[in-house]
Picture 1 (cartoon, rainbow, N blue to C red):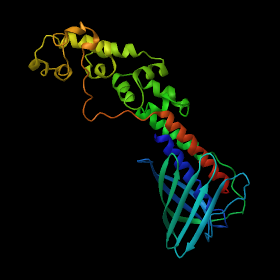
Picture 2 (cartoon, rainbow, N blue to C red):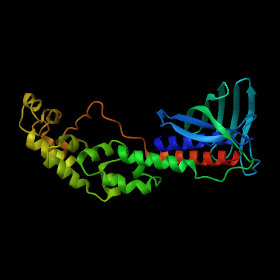
Picture 3 (cartoon, rainbow, N blue to C red):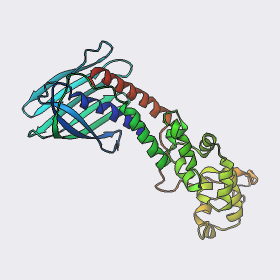
Length: 316
């Protein structure tokens, strides 16, 4: 599951904490949250909200359309905890716990689980100034998941995360910026290792995979040719490797490239076709291609629906 699903999980989790503010006038609290989801950690996010002087329960709006419920709320001593459950197309279960350190600080965790994955959110808060809460929900603000999705799309451009741009339309508005970065073979190689073939990259960005292969062959980029360009690979093998003995094949500029070559003499039945080229092993430590992005986008849809569920449950 890619970084988009994680950003949506963070958005869903963030919806909980402004909600805790909507009970009575009190103090402005600054909360910093950090989410770890599916093995990756999001950058910390900080929000401010007016919290009640006495946190008695996560306040709920009696919304008939909501299929989420908070249960088992407890506030004992300096600890507050609760459970939550959402029914429907994308069921959610979760639990949260906050521990107060004196009157001015707290820390805690929220665990959320959906069929597509798990997340753990760590948070810490500090009290700032007194605030006045009128008892009315604040005006609707922009969907936090949109901001976080934009952040992840920008990071995808910077990191050449091809999976975000080749499948689905979540990052459509950033696709051109991604394509503009494919101006070198190094960039194309990096992108191809993160969720797509050079053919898919070329088709998406209006470029030529054959052109990239010809450029790689002309500049002796045998690493690129070996991974992506069968025709050019065959030509380079004949040019640089055929006729060399085993010792010579393993030496010099083309040593690694030729070391996997089995020439025509060893396979006479292949009559010099491309099939006579034995496949080279992937270089050690090469990054594995990303998982199919459609699955990640499907998960993102599920988590985005989760965020809406929580927004219907809590008054913010």
